[in-house]
Amino acid sequence: MAVAAAVVLVAGVALALLWAPEDADQGPSQRIFYVHVPIALTAYACFGWGAWKALRLLWTGDQRYDLESYTAVHMGTIFGTLTLVTGSIWARTSWGVWWSWGERQLVLFLILFLFYAAYFMLRFSLPDGPGRARISAVYALFGVVLIPISFLAIRLAENFIHPIVFTRDGPQMSGDMFFTFCVCLAGMVLLAGTLYLNELAGKRLDLRLRELREALELG
Amino acid sequence: MSSGEKYLAAVYLVVLATVLVYVAIISAKLARLEREVTALAERARETRG
Image (cartoon, rainbow over all chains, first blue to last red; front, top):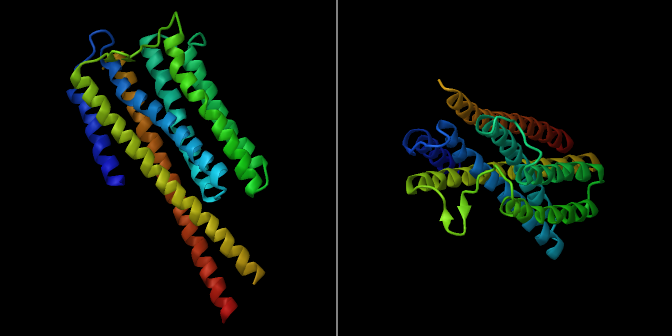
């Protein structure tokens, strides 16, 4: 998966910088779109995946879903940070400001990000065990409600400057641009998947080592 | 290099730097886990011996 992520990402970046046609309105800065939007969608996907794992935990009581949900939220927060940073740079070049508090899309994404940032504070303020896993799962599930609100906010706003690219009539871009976007999105999802699996393996190993250490101390 | 191109380069560099930092953190974590496994293996050998 790591090799696939690297190949698709390099191909996506090459397409975005060298092949995709330049936007007549925004010029070269429009190419930020090929990184910013896939990162934002990947962040949503990670939070959604974390909520799904949280639901599985609450449904089955299987504790392994706790670590999976936590890792997905961890990944979502990293991609969320990147969304805010890349979006801010794009805003500076397109709108002349680093941030606009009047934009519902931006503010709702920030709320979503801060909500999940608080997930870690909640998680690490509780003692380890099934209780912490359940409370964290409920919190992660609540957060997922913010995803469609954040996504729909731009469509409900009346005076927005944040562009709408995907409408009911399909993507508002040329075929070349859409193809490049799809490659970049696939690359970003593969990268997130690779990082998720690596992080999860590391966390599981850490947990088993702690158990082994405790067993040795008791023995 | 135009202003738009500078911002474009900044975005791609930020993403690349983040991925590299993340890989460095994962590498450091793996090295720590390896040290811990070695220490635990030694301890287990001492307990048995």
